[in-house]
Image 1 (cartoon, rainbow, N blue to C red):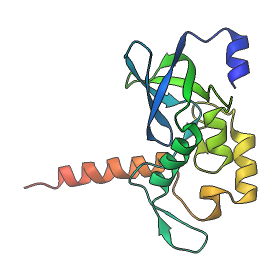
Image 2 (cartoon, rainbow, N blue to C red):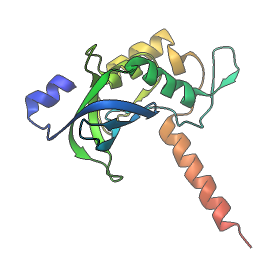
Image 3 (spheres, rainbow, N blue to C red):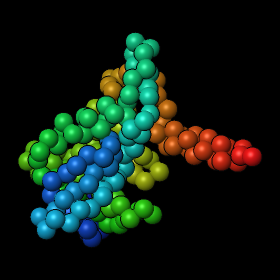
Image 4 (tube, rainbow, N blue to C red):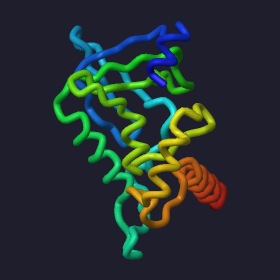
Length: 167
């Protein structure tokens, strides 16, 4: 996806710096001038921080926390660069990001490890990598989980129902 983005000439935003992992698909990059940018990794969706999943042994585990920890481990203290064409409705940069020291494309690696799923609503780039992770039962695919977008939708519905049931 990174090479395709560069070739298409659609890269309009380039940010690089030290990353703080918010969760498995969101970073805050602090650039050299001290400015901070919130980045949503394009084409992936990771479990929400409070989301639980079921492991291969049938036991529940904090898959959202694990996903964020995996991304932290990938990046360590390396500089990160993200290339993007636009921002989302929350003003986050929607970007393809990579570790500048290792060259690892972070979104692709998160999906390959089964720590995130391909977010096909925004990009189909990681579908083949997700198929490999599913077949190999890596990460989330080793047990049972609710897609992150379904989890968010259920939480929003529950919050609306609770708000509407007041006195």
